[in-house]
Image (cartoon, helix red, strand yellow):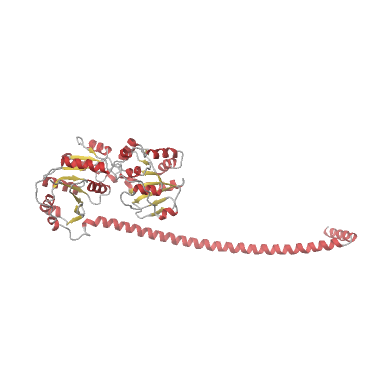
Length: 490
C-alpha cells in the first residue's frame, strides 16, 4: 500500500522557508507536491519528477474542479501549510476541505502576527484584524508546528488555547572544510575578521553595517558579509579594507566560508526577532561563536546552549563595535577563545540534525495523514489546460524585478567606480605635475649647490697655493707681509 501524498502550500520565493521545504522533500520518503501561491502568480511542483506547472491567471477562481481532480489523482492525504498570506492560506483551506483531509501548519516566522511585521518599529506588536483572520485557521489545524520554543511560546501567548509542537529546523552534518574566499579579499586580507551571514536587510541590521565597519576598522577588524546587503548585492569591497561583501553562495557552504575567511565572530544585530536561524546553526557548525540581539529565538538558543553573547536591549553601531573589539583582539579575546573551544562539545544539542527534523515530520505525517479514496494513478493531464502560456508573466515578475534591481545596482556601482577612477586620475595627474615641478626645483637647487661647491673648491686651492708660497719666503719678509696685511684691515 503506497503512502498518501503530502501537499505543501507555501508562498513564492520563500528564502529560509524554501530551504526547510527542500530538506523535508529530500528527507521524507513520501510522495509530495508543492503549491507555490502568491498574489502575482502560482505554480504546482512535482519534486520527484522535477516538474513545475505554472498556472494561468484565474485558475484557482475558475478551474477548481480540475485542480481537485489533479490533487486527488496523486492522492493527497494531508495538506501542510507553510505560509499564512492570503493566497497560501486560502488554497490550503480549500484543498483540505475539497479532498476531505486534515491540514497542519508550520509557523516559520513572526509574520503570523502581522504581514508587515518586518517593517514595524515593534515587530511583535501584532495587527488585530490580521490575527482575527489567522487565528481561526491555526485553531482548526490538526497540528501547529514551530521551529523553536521561543516562537511556540509567542504563538500560545497571542492565540490563547493554541497548541504548538516544537520541531527544530535541522542542518546536514558536514565535515568542516574551509572554502577559499574571493580573490579580491585574499589580496588585501585584514588581520581580524567578523562576519554577518545571509541576506542582510533592515530587519537583520543592515542600517548599522556601514557605520559598524568604520568603527571596527579603527581596531584592525574587517567586517565580511557572507551573503549580500540590501544596498550591495554584488561581491567585492564596499569599503576597502573594512567591509567586504562575498555575495550569494550555495546552500550549505556557510560553515566552510566562515572557516575560509577566518571569522572570529558572527554578528546577529537583528532588528526583528528570528524564529530559529539557520545562520546561527551554520555559525556553530563552523565552530564560530556569536554576538546577537537579546530578543528572539537566537537569544533563547544562546541562553540555553551558550556559544555566544547577547547585546544590551538598546544598541547602535558604536556600542556594537565596542563589544566586538573587546571580544576580537581586545581584553575579552581569551574569553572568546574559550567559548570557541567549547563549541566542539555537544554539537547535536546545539545544532539539530536534518535527519532528526525529517524523522519528526514523517511521524507527524503518519499521525495525521489519511488514506484517501483511490482515484487512479497520478495524471498531469488534469493540469495541462491550466498551465500558463506566458512564463515570463505573472509568475516570474517578482523575480524579474529582483534581477532588474540587481542589474541596476551593478550598473550604478560600475558608474560610481568609473567616477572614482576619473577623479583619482585627475587628482593623480595634479600630484604628478606638482611632483615633476618639485623635482625640477630640487634639481636646480642641486646644480646651484654643486656650482657653489666647485667655486669654493677653486678658492680653497688658490688659498692653499698662496699659503705654500708665503711659507717659502724668508721669515723677516713673511712677518713684514703679514704686518702689512693686518694693518690694511684696520
